[in-house]
Length: 463
Image (cartoon, rainbow, N blue to C red):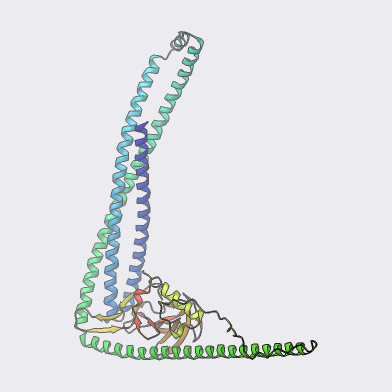
């Protein structure tokens, strides 16, 4: 019994390990497919940029992202190889176990056949039955002979089942070895491609070194554009804050007016009631007239529904309404989980100060520049209201307010929304414009009501 229990526990453990490995295998394959799609998108975008025959920061950033994605793919392939090795190991263990089990079953069955052969005549069976001391003993011997026949049939079934299990495991082992061979070939292919990517990166850096003067001029142009956009955005935010304060002042004035009207109405009602009481008293057989009560009862102001306020939170004029406060809180709660403004793209200019490899040059970015195919759909990352649509000449900019937060989408060729439009997460804002290097580009920024820029990568979900 103990031996059977040990075997059962071992089989359950092996089954659980196999199930876990299978799940991990599926996850690895899903990750590899995702990386393969990303590499295909990167190659497509790079091909568009290379048509301009001019090296750019976008091209270098795309190649760097390619190297990183390729390294992740190789790492995933290595995990897959380790899983395959585990499968091969467990299959070999099972094959060894089934072979031993099959040898034991065959040996026991052979003994049964020898015994059956020696007692094969009907006389032996009848002699065995009729030599019993009693009728009950004879019936037991009949039952024994029947059970012995069933036992031999069971032995045959067990041998066949074990042979099938052994054959299955041997097929699995062969499949695992084939998969390992194919995976090793894919690993070698990706390693060679990674080496080519690194050479491409080195060439891009060298080419950028030769364009230092041109790059310096581009950075100056970007800085002028950045300041221009910054000034426009600050003006939009100031206008929104001023408008919110004006609406809040009007709302408070309206509340005060309603309270005053309510107070006067209550006072008039009280005076009418007092006059009626005085008249009733005078008509009541000359009863003493009570002294008039000139005191006014305290009038409770009308209750207003306001959003729940947290004493630890600093509130903005842009959160004076429940709708705007909810938008702010929802935006904050989704920090790190907001969807990307584009379905696929690569950050080529990061937030903050960035450097150009191989040169002493550096620049500043208030958001992130995302390289995408020209015409890519750009979407809102959260629910909000369009604060402004700005025409910048060759391109356009859309600013969306989410309570006290703002998201800005610039470098758009076309725009699909208008000022004051309500938008939701996923609402199409516009389409990406073409950039100087031949590819598409979208600039995405996040800021607060004070005009401070926040790192967008901290708000967007991981890709």
